[in-house]
Length: 250
Image 1: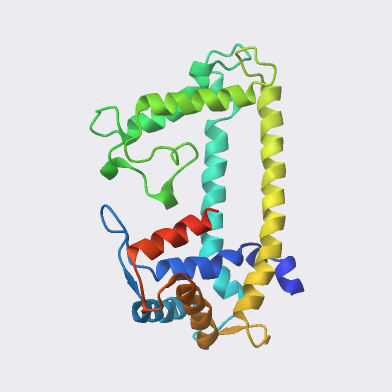
Image 2: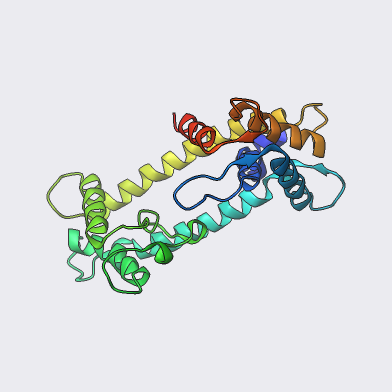
């Protein structure tokens, strides 16, 4: 499918079905996972299809299927750009001595921690944790229960990775080299996603007509449900959900 190879939609379409299936799942219960009924998943898949079918013609084109992921991708790029600005050499080198110390490097992450720690108890509580979609770089590590010491430890570990000559300070060249390596990694990941995107859309487009009908969309999601419903009782139990989660993690 050459159109997918050359388009942003193709690059991120691989996430469309996984995201749709994820949105069809019930929320996590406190302390565990909720059971998931096949009939409920089918209903949610139908609702999700209607949301994605922007022109309401009963079919999903590649661009429609990829729209939510495209929006997330745009948001991620915006957050990353903001993060790069905050972590620029000029911003980090607060005393203008042309090197960045561990204390200077950790300062942005600690400032972010302090903004989140609204009650000032030195720990990110559940209600203080940032929503995943709104997290900026560095906030992803601030899970429920993360402490200020955890943030410092993570910053120190990252600093050690970037400090190529291990002299205890970072130069602008070291930061530039690290960013170049990150760009290469992102390019490789993007290329991998292009290949996976072709497979994902082709698998959903079971009749090969270049678009995905409601029935094809439901079939893709329900086949995934059935694979995880180990005892075929029409309900994925908490244990089956945990097993599926472990399988995805390898």
